[in-house]
Amino acid sequence: MRKSIFALFLTVIALNFACSQNPPKSPHLTVEGKDVKVVYGQPSKRGRVIFGAEGSQSLEKYGKVWRAGADEATVITFKKDGMFGGKPVKAGDYGFFTIPGEKQWVIILNSEPKQWGAYNYKQDKDVLRVTVPAMTLKEPVEKLTYEVKDNALMFMWDTAGFSVPLQF
Image 1 (tube, helix red, strand yellow):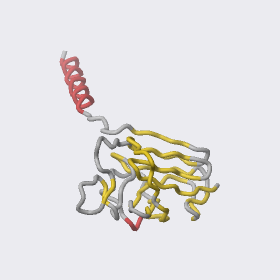
Image 2 (cartoon, one colour; image 1 turned 45 degrees about the vertical axis):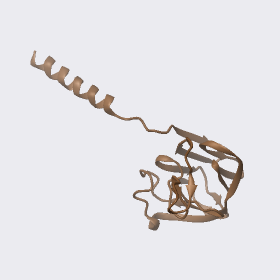
Image 3 (cartoon, helix red, strand yellow; image 1 turned 180 degrees about the horizontal axis):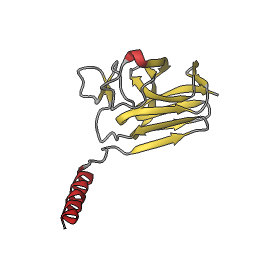
């Protein structure tokens, strides 16, 4: 009898714990090309100003390191050695961060792929940085979107975007 009551007690505790877990606020997506995979949380614009100068009401500020997605830091996986933004990159998993800018973006590959946001981001763990021109999109994109093409990684959200050349 005691074993049954104890088992019931443990079951109630486990169910309570499982039900109390909050799902991520943003869906998590995986986009994949032949040699590159990107896993990211996909936030929506929802009428917000997304990128802007310090002191603005924007969600993300120009000149500040950003996780390039929602929730956990975005992770990029290279399936084999190649070139990323004209610089050599080894196969493996990397934390993917950016520094948004009006005219250009700094794209960062960090050796710590498993991070929550950019809160514990450490620059000394950067593997490489590349600077790419900022693109202004003609139509706003509601949900943050990555596309992996054979020769480029594309980013689009609101009216901002960038493209990083890929070569394998």
